[in-house]
Image (cartoon, rainbow, N blue to C red):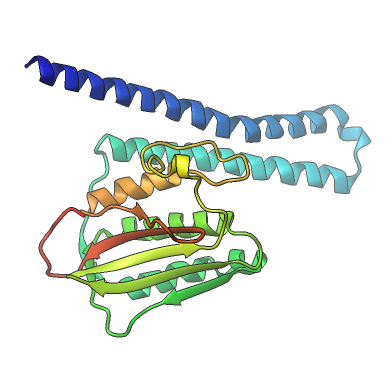
Length: 245
């Protein structure tokens, strides 16, 4: 009993530490856009009569972009809280992962073109349907592609590959960006890291991805040894038995 109590205490201590780190890192990510938003609005308020139309428009555009960033972080935090507290439950259905992948890729065609990135899809013929919550898997693919595109330098490549193996369809999203530092690789799906700096790390988007996949009897994993960053998850083929993996 003493061993169980000690183990439970260690688990609670670790969870408390992870929550503290999450709050600290989210605060770090919010501080920069909030400071920029405040600074540009303050300048507009104090010097509105001294700024020309083009300069006022530029300040407003920057303030708007920063407010969108803050709103996105707040929405992601709210969504993660709902997932963590069991307020969101999956509604599984059979659907074509090929069609869904193509739809999500189309959404990113313009952002990729703006960065001069190549978007590629590797889709084998006659891939079977999968069973999962369609909306959640669309969000998973959206988060992974958005993350890959944001962290891949100009003229780079972002690729989505589908493959059938052992009653499941594997979905792999890869890029040739800077990759994830070794020190962060074991924790990118447990807590977010500040998004600043030269390297990419885990964020709220990856936590949301992992929670949604867990609700669909899957999980995302980082493929070791790949150049850039490669993330992979698997979905059950329609009619296959449930399993965690």
